[in-house]
Picture 1 (cartoon, one colour):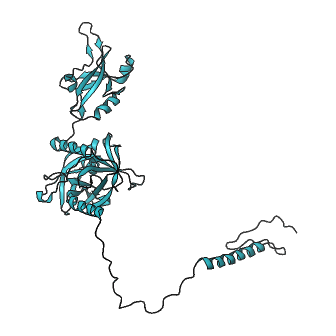
Picture 2 (picture 1 turned 90 degrees about the vertical axis):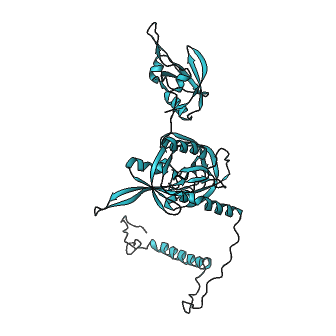
Picture 3 (picture 1 turned 135 degrees about the vertical axis):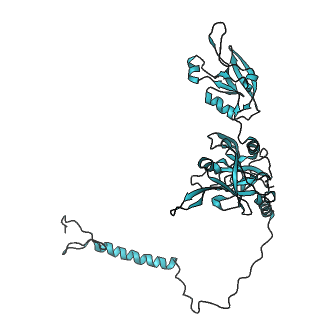
Length: 400
């Protein structure tokens, strides 16, 4: 028996029907489906327990009493350590908010929070340390910086100084000394991977949140808001989230060992990789900001020859000094720039700097980065070439 080429038509909710007067192809399929459903129902009957009977009787029991409470055991040593640390450091941690004035639809002006972060009390003069990026928008848009102390009193702050290359800032409030509890400052030079650390801050504006973890790694490098690398950064798995920025990272004794500044996360939330600026960097930077409001940039008092001009002149490596400031540290070390031969009038080459502290420098940016990694007062050992003779010249780093 054969079928013609007529196409089957599909109606919603029905199988295609065979032409009248011919056997249906769908019937065996339908029978197989029914058998399968029946078998599946039998299997489910034995695999899935049947629901119990619905309780009968009244819904409420007036004689019900509260469950007996099982007493808590005493906190263990780790818990006692964390509890005592939080009690000790909590008064030193603050909210740092930026406040904007916005005009409503009814034309009235009201305050609106533009950003939030954390900070901590540095001294009894009301100085607060936080991240530069926490108050950056206040500088750029003339917003109000506001501090909320642990006792929930609110104080407007003024900006004392900022260090974008270290992501640090110092602000100040006019709170009385009895409300200020300066944080205890420790050191980061003796930190080891595996040491326990605690973070206290205001993640997602949830004030005075404490998390704990360990030092996961040391000597990390992250990019600062000033587009300069921050070296020696502490990596921790203590939960750090948006709003923790500027808050303290503490050791088990409650001493400041770092300032929480960034997280590495594809989602913007904590994934166990947080970074803190080490306190051995924070301490001198904050002190300098308090002293003069800014950080002196490392400087030798020299200007370099344009690199393309230098290479065209036949110097295939190093960087050459163009000009030496008579008042700068390079002049005091005896370095020379381009000069004119008094007899012939020819232009004489300046000192060619080949290495800085043993590292070759072959471009002006390489020299600038090597200098930026030093601090004012450090001594650099320069390998220079003068009149085809190489020598080592120690130079003290100045500041501008």
